[in-house]
Image 1 (cartoon, rainbow, N blue to C red):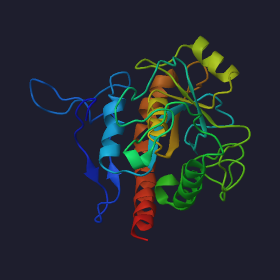
Image 2: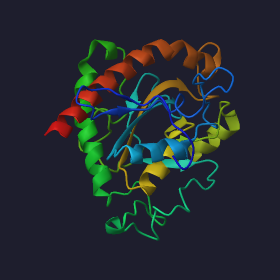
Image 3: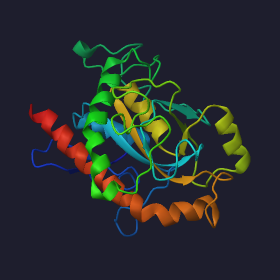
Length: 275
C-alpha cells in the first residue's frame, strides 16, 4: 500500500468473500528472520492495514477487540458489547490525507475518489453503519446459546433478544451510549486515568479500534465493533493480582468466545455475499 506493506491476509470462507486480518500480525516483519512479528498497539500500521482492505475491495468491516470494563457491575468481565461511539484519549491526526485518491471534502466516486475529510463518525444518520450494526447483532445473537458462551455474563440493559447490543434489538445509537475509550498503550492505564475515563462517560477501554474506526469512516467503510470484556480496569478489579492478572487468566475463555463470534460472522457475512 502507499502507507506500508500488509501480510497475512486470509479468507475464512470457501467463497472467498470474508477476509481476515489480525491487526497485531500483519504490518511488521522481523528484518533478521523474515518472519511476521507481533506489533503492539502503538506500532500497528493502521493506515496500511485499512488501505489494504480498500485495495481488496472490502465493503464493510466488523472488528473484534479485547477490552477492559470501566463499569464492572453494569458491564461485567465475561460480557460482550457493541460500542456505538468512541473517545480518543490522545486525538492525534489519524488520516489518509493527503492522498490523490481521497478527494476534497466529499468523495466523488465517478472520478475515482474514495474518501472524505470533514465528517462526523458514529452518527445515526449514517444508515450504512447503523444498518450493518443491526445485521451484525442478528448474526451474533445465536452465539449466546453456544457451548463456548455458557459462562458469558449479560450487561445491564442486555437481554437474550438484544444481545450483544443493549436496550433494543436493532439498536443503532444507544441511550446511554456504549463508548469505546481508545488509549495509547502498550501499558495498562493508571487508576487516575481510569477515573477520568469513567467520568467522561466511557464504557470499555482498548488501545486500537478508535484508529481503525476513524480510517474506515474516512474511506466510507461501515465499521462495526464487537468488544469482549476480559478484565476490569486498573483500580476497579477485585481479582487477585489485579487487572493485568485478570486479563491473563481469562485469555483462554475469551479465545473460545472469540472463535464462536468469528464463526457466526463468517456464516452470516458469507451468506449475505452470496445472496
